[in-house]
Image 1: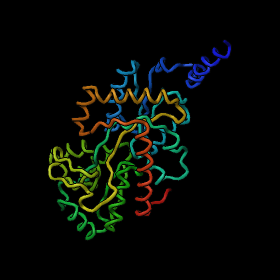
Image 2 (image 1 turned 180 degrees about the vertical axis):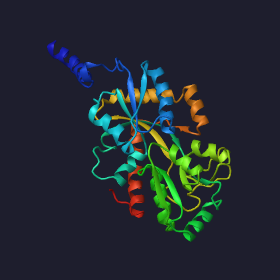
Image 3 (image 1 turned 90 degrees about the vertical axis):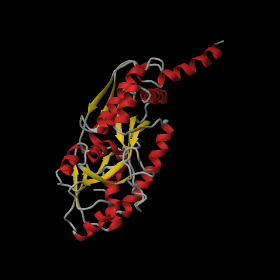
Image 4 (image 1 turned 30 degrees about the vertical axis):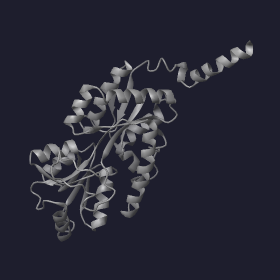
Length: 326
């Protein structure tokens, strides 16, 4: 009898131990959850996670709070989750695929943005459009390359931060075509970079589909090429992909939710289910449609595989572009 009772209690004890402070899987979540966003309020990234967070709160029956911690190319927000918050699922780190490129650019990082964060779900993705001011004396990539070669050092290429996916795309193009273009990084998202583009202070910029389509539609900028392998005729009629134009390894942006490594798997699964549910909310679908963003329903395993594959690709791009961590 005692042996039988012990056999029954062992799984229960293990389940209780898996949750900090004895919280059971059924009781999670018992308090508000915070998503730490590494970009300023009002950016596309901020709005993506506000939309998803709102949908998750309906599924989880607790508030999902957005806490903006911009700066240091995302490290401030991610380090806060990794070093200051417990691994209990109540603190989430919002990331884009820029967190995979960070080790390419930066040495002596205080955290490993891949190993120290456990993926929950990629929730959304979007191609990037390379666009230029209407005043630019070119209308396509070939004309831009010819102009840049004839005017070395006279063009400015804006980018959001200095360690973004757009940065890798930028350097890959300049390396492939042997272009001498001044790189101008902007912090805190793409808003300031777009202002500079519209003022013709920078002549080239990768932007999300939402950002680019608004300005191209208003005839304030003109598109040169899209990341990814498929055209988006409904949004950018006639716009070629950069892959079509001979530029490999051009990537768009995705938005992902992560927790501190060591968070119990049942908690991760609960958050993943809530994220999937949020993508089905009418309000989220409406926002994504307006922002030209695609929902992405993924499992933690899907995300981990994507992280591994893309990290390897970014390292290869960095080597070819002669980028060294600094």
